Amino acid sequence: MGTDEQQPKKASVGEKIKQLPSLIKRFWKEPLRNDRYLNLKEVLSLGGSAMGVSTIVCIVSSLLTASQISEVYGIDVIHGPYICLAASLLGLIIQPFFSKLLQNTHTRFGRYKPYIFLMAPIFAGLAIAATWQPQNLDENARVIYAYCICIPTLVMWNLFNNTFQMMPGVVTPNQQERTDAWAPIGLLVGFAPTIMNVIIGPIRSHFLSLGQEYMAYRYMGLICSVVGILLVMLLVKVKERVIITNSNNENVGVIEGLKMVLKNKPLIIFTLALILGCMRSTIEIDAQIMGKLRYATDIETGLTVFSSLTLITGFAVTPNMILLPLLTRKFNNRTIVMFWSFLNFLGYIILAVVGVQNIPQGTVSAVVLTLLRYIALFNGITSLQPLMLSEISDYQQVMTGKRLEGFIQMFAYTLVLVFTNIGYVVMAYVKQAMGYQPANYFNVTTVSDELMNTAINYYNVAFYVSAISAALMCLMMLFYKLDKKKHAEIVEELRRRSLAEGHGELAIEPAGNEEVPAGVDTDAGEYQQEMMLAANVSKENPAGGADNPFEESGAAADGGTDVPESDGGTDNTAEESSSEGEDTGNN
Image 1 (cartoon, rainbow, N blue to C red):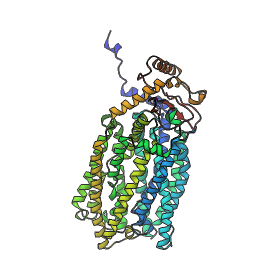
Image 2 (tube, one colour):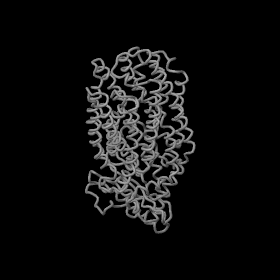
Image 3 (cartoon, rainbow, N blue to C red):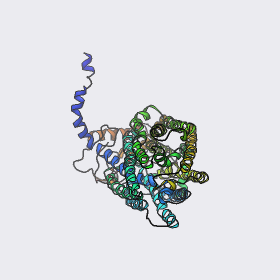
Image 4 (cartoon, rainbow, N blue to C red):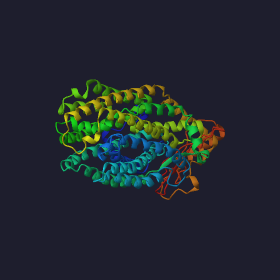
């Protein structure tokens, strides 16, 4: 027999192109592979909703920073960091109770989507109020307004954004699929603030010439909030696929949940690394002021140039988002984060050593500062962090029988934010001591040489702080040991325990004994094979490590898996929540 009969020839490029339309048509309704769960419609819907979240979040994050609050509200520099710190402390108090609420929520729409839909309009309304900035108020009234509006806005911002960041861990139980889907979505998440910065620069410059710079934020706040809510609603087309277990459906108390996650060593180390690196972007909260002062000889032009160049610095994450699926296949998460942290350190330490005053004002500053800031911002930690936390949740499940994503988020996001804002309070006192008041650079077309020199001196200090923080984060990640091999062992252990409990035998029908809707292709032959495999494994080899069959359902119980401590068993049956009222049979 010839080799041509034994080994079929690979399809040519032309044949692949011809097959592409039918491939896309099939991918629109069902996954491309049997071990995948997401179809193209869900991936695009998840990406669109991520764009919506980012659109609302970015208008708030561009305005309500430790530095910008003081600038745009025209209040003392110390108030901005205090507002951010108060919001993060309040969030730290609320987060454990919110995490308990999430853990104990079981709806047919899933665990996280109901809260995302509920918080979206509230957050958007607060964003509009925060960007409105009432005029003709004295300083005391502006301070009161800033505290009363900005604190709840920031609290809601963190709850809303952090809840959405849990979605990558529950849309599919396949970790590599999480990365493959979330990496391009990360491009969309980074796309919104970049485009907003490009647009808002000329708008601010226009209103600045009219002496009404505050109007730029009013327009952008309203537009971004409305567009953001509409895009967030696309999440209704996305299903939560979770690994259900009996004990994971049990209620968890706040103290109990905190005790459980404190035993999670990878979480603690990663949290410490994030805390040490929380000041690595110190200079970036004043980057816009630096840009309008140094990128041109006049402020209006400098502001326009800076906004235009955010297309470059804003897309520093783009190569990493494109390469993230490849990077996660070739390297461990620790290596990737350390590489990004080193680049963060390198870009800022060069600028700190050279000194802003030694870079000529105008085109030279625009080129040099943009290039080195691009190197420093060359990372995709925003997209990788949710994926790392999903692995940490798997580790948590093996240890305690519950994933506890909400409690894990409290450490990796909320607690880190508290330390970040404490650092910004310290930097606010540094600003005060140096005489640097951001409000002095708002709604003005010229500044004195004294104010320019004061700003330059502070920027040099901020570059050093950013570089040192990035270096400390890089060093701390040396102790992070949860690599790909260990995570694969965790997943196999969860599958083994699930099959040992016999849950795999239920994988051919939706949870809740619901019938598969008519017209939905369930691929009965494949389901029967999985049923027989699960039955044979559970009867003949209860501790065996066979592939785990997943169940899709219209009633999601939670966002993860459960491993009871008493007998080490889990129910690794993937339950899927559907707001569309049908089971797509993605297995």
